Image (cartoon, rainbow, N blue to C red; front, side):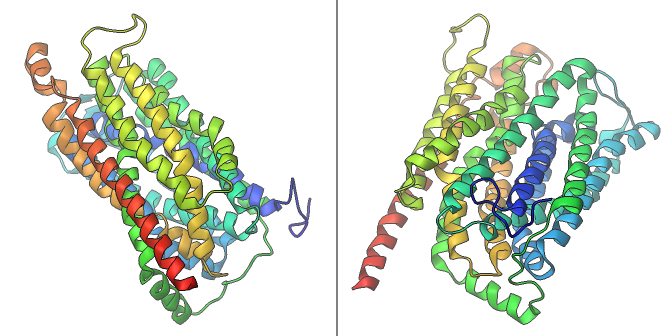
Length: 460
């Protein structure tokens, strides 16, 4: 086995590559489940749109809030122990998502098949058994959010960090693409049971990651391990009083609120408007496919530009993506006989969204990692995900309200004509998110100019 203190593959250590490998497995698991989580909550457990959106938003938000604390704890106990804890919890949690429906069916409250038939489940309290299961996944996932990106920071240098994060982000999106690919073929074979079975696939992936960490992850980068609670508190104080990082997080939240609609709004939107044969998993896969193809190229093109400059380009692309998504419901004449306007415009909009991600996400992580003192990478990279906590809470919450208002559940209407009348302005949903993205883009532009001016004054 290659020693961890020897460079591997163009200067990256074994710990770097193992971190990226297990990130690939974890993303396959997470996105396979998350792309249909709101549908799972509604179709399998009987929650309505607003309830499903709130639960999904709180779950996603928790995944991005807790890394602030789990990241600091990971710095203290070491990344290997933290990964073992994380993947153990994730495996248990995903198994729980797969087993829970069987328990509900055994109680006679629901019957699962190609379609779900409820026998009182929606009126009972049993669906809320999902809460502790999601909490276990939330804890495990929150460790991963901070550990893997922080491990990349530990295992790279200032010179190769931007490239290291582009490799990391490419692995994230290969995992996302693969995970999302599973659900649509599975749905075609077993119908709505696919929303149950996908969880067993996720559990297998996180178990594979657990095994890989146990046998292969070893690192000589141990700065920060064994620190006292006082030292952890001082680190918290430094990061929570860094106004630049706090403002940047708030601004980038606007981008992620739009990006999160890939999971909060898009699956129900396309199925309701384009029909049950629509394939939201394949549509969502446009995002990671474009990122995998372009992220390394864009990172190279932006290599001599600052992280903020690169992010600015992406921020102005994101409102455009939302506007393009809205066009599917505007044009009444179908452009192609083989693909609906809803699907076509969603694919084009998601492609633009993915391009924006290529400019923003790797450089954002790089920016945060360069602010982190040695031994505090976990805390800082955990803190960097705070934007997705805010985006999840507000993005999913807004999504549930907008879906109910502009694109409601067809089963709530007596006739198709009544539903069509109620959803004629479904595209308005995307106007709200375009406005959010545009405000965030101008805010980052102002942030860049103000901070640049302040830095020049310091030099003087």
